[in-house]
Image (cartoon, rainbow, N blue to C red; front, side, top):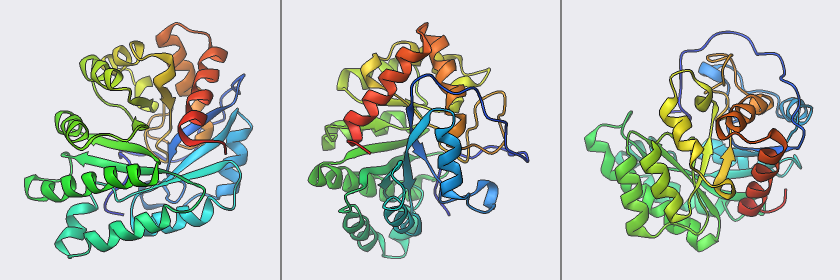
Length: 286
């Protein structure tokens, strides 16, 4: 699809399973509708079973174009360990607007979001990395429409922010963020983290926090209050170290959780309890 999770150079194969977590947690953001680098989508039941075996017993599946949103709305009704989020990815918005189809696409997303197991509007937001200036007005229009949708439906919202930190925060302040707002795959620095915390946003950390050069991101992680923390994969991409570039999946969350615990100097069971509690508070029971 034209929009979607962050991509990185890939390599073949799937890593072996890490040691199980002592307390089960939630993968706050994954894309089980797609394979890596155009490969086939995974077997959902097998992915979920593998995740459960290492203490990742719940996932939030994100569909971020119309086909993925339709798939998500259906599949989350078939698996007890899965709830869904749907939206038009920021990189979808310019294409849809150019085709005169943005308004109709937003209406379909809102209709699909009425499903009981859809708990999130997202990922929506801004992406200045892939979208040049002429397409950004459509991204802003779509972002604002999703914000209003989340508030009308009383759903959590997950934000995609790539190379657009200041404008993402400005739009959220101007439009009025939903009560439950998540910065998915947080990529900001300490100053941005402090501002998000001041506003009460949740920050979700992906495998990027384990990368050797991610010092600024780990500094940001260290100042987030425990009640605003989440963890995610953004699978099939952003695989945590030491498997960067391999296929990612929810069963690799323990690698990121342990790196987060080390950065924050807390024991792993306590962090797991916080991550699980925060997810249930945001999205409701699975």
